[in-house]
Amino acid sequence: MMRLSPPGYAKFSQTNTLELAYGGGEANVAISLAYLGLNACHVTRFPDNLLGRAATQFLRQNWLDTSKVVYGDQRMGQYFLEKGAVHRASEVVYERDHSAFARLKPEMFDWEEILKDADWFHWTGITPAISQGTADACLQAIKVANRLGITVSADVNSRKSLWQYGKTRHEVLPSLIERSDILMASEYDLIDIFQLANDPENSSFKEVVKEVSQKLPRLNKIFDKAREMVSASHHRIQGKMWNGSSVAKTPFLDVTHIVDRVGTGDAYCAGVIFGLLHYKNDQDALRFATAACALKHTVEGDANMVSFENVKGLADGNTSGRIIR
Image 1 (spheres, rainbow, N blue to C red):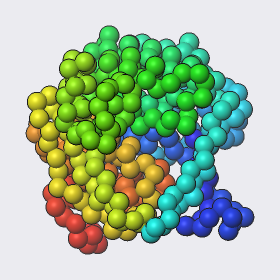
Image 2 (cartoon, rainbow, N blue to C red):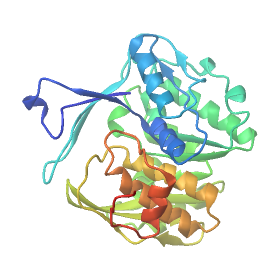
Image 3 (cartoon, rainbow, N blue to C red):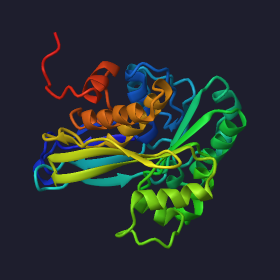
C-alpha cells in the first residue's frame, strides 16, 4: 500500500502536503527479515502503472526479491496516517476497495513454482480480509506450502473494519489458521475468531491459547505481546509465547520516545521467524523478537530497517543507545 501522512506530528487539518511511503503487513515482515540477513521474496499484485512500479522499486531497494509480483488494473491500495503524540492517539483511514490487490484472482499465482525453493511462508489476517479473491489465494498458498513441507506462520492482525465483502473473520480465518504451524495472536482475537465462550475481559492468554491449541494440533507455538501504554509516545513492550505446555514471557522493554508505531507488530513477527530459525532456545528467540519490536518504534516508516547486530544488542540488554563507531 501507499502510506500518506502529514509531516511530523501534524494533523491533516494543519497541512497541505503529504509524505508518501510504502508498506503492508507481509511486505514489512519480508523487509525486516532482509535487513536481518535472510533472503526474502514478496508476492503481491500491484497496479500496472507508475505507482505499481515505484512500489516494486521500493521493495527492491530494500533487498526483496520482486520476481513474483504480478501487475494489473490501475489503483493502488492506500492508507492515511495521522501520527499521535503524548496523549493524542494516532488515526488511520484505509482506502483499499477496488485496488489491484483487492481484485486479484487465485489463478494469477503459480504457488508450486513460487514456493518450490522456500523454507518459510508467512501470511497475515489482513490479506483474506480484503476480498474473496485474496482469501482464496491465501488459502491456496497455504495448502501448497503444507504439501511441500514448508513452515507456515500467521499473524491474525486482522482489522475488523476491512471485512467488507460479505464474509466475517470467524468465517474465513479458522480454516487458514488450522493449516499454520506458528501463530501470532492475542487472546481477544482468538476468542472472537473461534467464537469461544471465554470472557475477553477476564480470560488469560494461557487459558485461551491452551483451548485453541487443543482444537488445532498442527500449531507448534503461539506468540503475542503485551503493550502497556503510558501515553501515545511512551509504551512498554513484553513478549509472550505458548510452547504447547506453558507460557514464557520476557521482561518489559521501555520505549520512552516513540518515533513511529506503525509496523511494530510486523517487526515482532519478523523477529519471531528469525529467532526460531536461528536460536535453539525458545526464550532466546522470544527475547530477540521483543527487541525487534521495541526497536521498530524508533524507525520511521512501516518496515523495521535494523540489522541483526542492532536487535541482538538490545536483546542482550544493551539499552544505552551509545553511538556505534
